[in-house]
Amino acid sequence: MQITSYLKTKTVQIAAWIGFLLAYLIASTVFSLAGDYTNDILKARHVLGIGFVLTAVALALIAWRYGQQLKKHNPRNIGRTKVTRKVIYQFLLILLFMMIFQMFWSWLISQHILVLPENQKAVASETVQMPLWNGIFAIVLAPIFEELIFRGIFMNYFFNKENRLNNILAIVISGLLFGFAHELQFDANWLMYSALGCFLSFTYMHFRDIRYSIALHFLNNLLSII
Image (cartoon, rainbow, N blue to C red; front, top):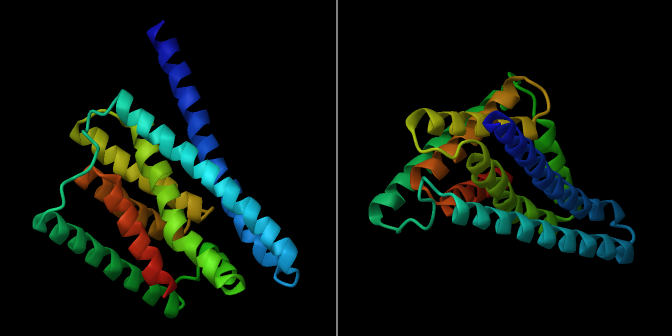
């Protein structure tokens, strides 16, 4: 009976998590479609408006669910970490390591050891079409969505016990899924995206405050676009 109940709960959680991911993907897709109508300003505005509405609804739903999760079961005491000098130093150190990793990845691409990921090509193309709005989405909104989905909700659904093994598995598996969401084939770029996901997962787990992984994600996207 307990096994049946457990499987039922996990099935519902998997379906819900996939639903949140689809809501984000649909909102972002509609948002980016406005760039296809740059020659028709009126149509572009209509599509962009629909994109904003879908984005707002999806983000509100996902953020609400994350908050409800923490109210119901929060063994890691996830919340708002007090900002201290030590916390700032630790955050900047993680950011430094992440930037070194990004520079190494860029070097591999510049030396033609790796090819430019399709995801990066798509982001660059969309940013050229609508620099302001797609820039805002890529730098500000995407990090919030992705941290809530891949770190907050995912870890609380499937790795919500406070122990070393569980925390390590949460960081690694969340990172691998993040990689797969950005590179749909198992290659070197998937490993690179997965490593970035692990940086973000570690940040969330270390500070026990999703604001830090969102901030790290924000800075990473900002510096990448610049």
